[in-house]
Image (cartoon, one colour):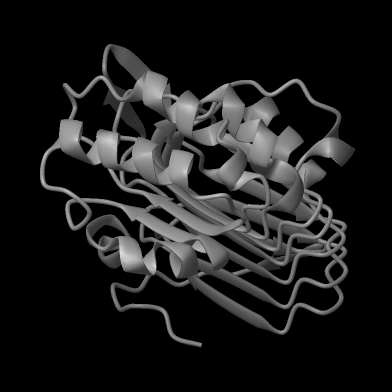
Length: 260
């Protein structure tokens, strides 16, 4: 990328290869210069783009309008991989939906996820892996999103805020990794948010591995209709409950890290 910016001789070659862009301090040190560089790159490259990785901007940076500008860029029309770390109190831009038809892998960190009123079949039809880390979202939108991921194979939920229970039903999911925030409630900005501690996994015929790696939760997990589940790593609080079908599994408290 730096070669493309510094030498015109490389520009024809740079424009002919898929774009892989990481937006962090290595691109430019300073929010304003970094935003200008990203805008220039996206306006100069004809596409397609393979990967876009946006790292956290400083809290006082007015970057939100730029997100929409970037996500609407024609260079991102065929984007395959998106990593978005907005920074606490920022929302995922609605323009992100424009990228969903071609995404195969996505990661969303440190942001609010808004209500998405889109037919599930139109959302992320090719998505195979998604990671949520330290996000704020309510129960209904989250379940709506998970239901829409018809090709999803790997799901990671870590430090999710905004609800106390979650129902997951996925006919293609193979891996689930869960780690919760180690408190009953958290506060972001001026909002006091509930954290999720009850998880129901149902109608997941291809689920093979369930990893729950947190001494504090979820406090109750129910696993129903998962005939291929062969590996369960579970480390949680002393009084946690684990149900596999109609069987209650006794969970022993352990301070050691889980291992398969």
